[in-house]
Amino acid sequence: MDLNGILSQLESANEVDTVRLLHQYSQENTQTFTFDQKEEALRIKLCQSVLTVLGRQVQPSCQKTCLETLRILSRDKRVLGPVATVEGMLVLTGMAMLGSGEEDWHKQETTQDGLQSEEEKSVVVEALKCLCNVVYNSAAAQQVCVDIQLASSLCASLRSAHTWPHEVGLFILRLFFLLSALRPDVRRVLRKDCHAVRLLTEVLEHTLYVHWVGTYEAARPEPQALPLPAENNERAMEALKALFNLTLSESRNEEDHHQFRLLAAILRHLLMLKTETEEKTEEAHSHAVNLLNNLPVSCLDVLIDVPVQGGVEEYGGKNMEAVQVLLDFMERRIDKGSNYKEGLTPVLSLLTEGSRCHREIRRYIKTQVLPPLKDVKIRPEVGTTIRNKLVRLMTHVDMGVKQTAAEFLFVLCKESVDNLLKYTGYGNAAGLLVARGLLAGGRGETQYSEDEDSDTDEYKSAKPFINPITGHVEEPMPNPIEEMTEEQKEYEAEKLANMFDKLSRQNVIRPMGVRPDGTLAPLEETLIGRPEENSDTDSD
Image 1 (cartoon, helix red, strand yellow):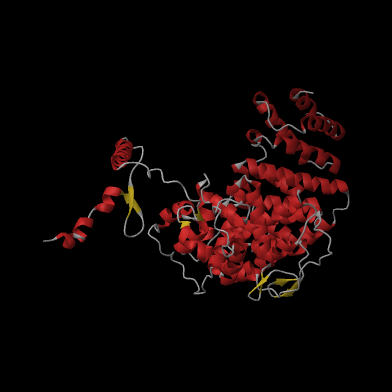
Image 2: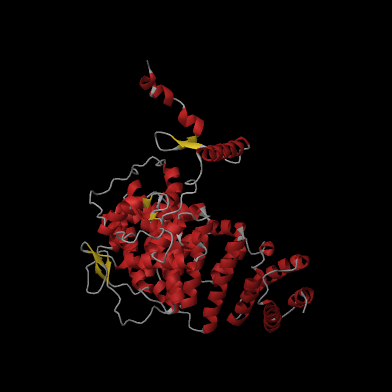
């Protein structure tokens, strides 16, 4: 049935006929995501008609059908005018059982408990789905959310999270995530006025079955424990995404510090959990990494300040189980071979900052990533070890990936150029050294402990024969000019110099030199002043 026919019949339809007409439209368009622009005006009228029906006292079955139709229509951002108003949004928030302010939270909790029938639950879920679509697709609706203080209502709902049916909780958290992602001003209100970080942390505790055995220590999951149920995992992912938005701010106080350490402990617990599939576990770990990146790096000691139990990774008396999970996650992301920027750089950044700030973390990771060198006959980027994989990334085409991988290895080497070159070779490290102004050698600015790196006997014996550019011992190569006469050598040298001169004059290449401070500059600039500096050796 066409839209004109539906609209003309809706004007005089009773409740039963309204359900029939709208159900037919929804069935025909359930998989429609791209709409005919010629019918745009008709769809706007249908939106208005549906809202009019929802404003009446109708049965839950009729409300559900209306909301299903509105959910489909809300996929088209051009027809949301009637919905993106105070009146339209109040209709939807009323259907979603979201009160008009924080003072209504007791009423909301009672209402959530009172959702007896499946139809009533379906109405709330459909209303929340509509709100998610409308908020995502309409800037005007986002502003209305600010006007009607939807943020406070969402926080009031978080207080009764333990009473939610699964889908109700899922879409409340998704709406929370969307609003906090799209409106930075709402983000500030949620964080400072509504204490949303604390509320979402409590949701995570409940959802992940966290049992505290210390101030910042959650009980370790039993080895034989069942995987985290899929529904709990879904809600936890939405809560983590919302928390990511709320922790983007750099302004923090003492209360935040305690809350962030609690979060770090919960995220450690999450890293230890298994979900029903490896794919879902990977997704959970990805969200945990993203959120850990937002926390102050000083909070990362919570990951390792846990009593060491038998059979777990340990280093220097610290529990490295969570750090090993992060290393394994990083290697899996490298092995995927795609989407490095979004999938790999967050965990690399997290491990880099953790290593920079926490000595135990750095020393443990170095034992796993850069163990003492033994076989130096193979180039650093060739092979299947995690070191080989990271060195390959140092010359990746994506600048962000390349810099992040190089910075990680540099920090593991305590920002010592000599140590870095030992593991990577000069050619692979050149990009980092140029960016840091360390082509002439030296160290970065961070101060590290004085513990010495010990070289193996194999490395010490091979060191004089290692090519510093490639970072390995090369097989002897025949000398191409060995059988040339002096005249031939001079001819080849002049020919090479002329080729470089031609390329330089055509701006194909630009000869560069290294300044005394280790930065690159055009060759002519680096030569200025050198004759004067050495003039006393040439004086009569």
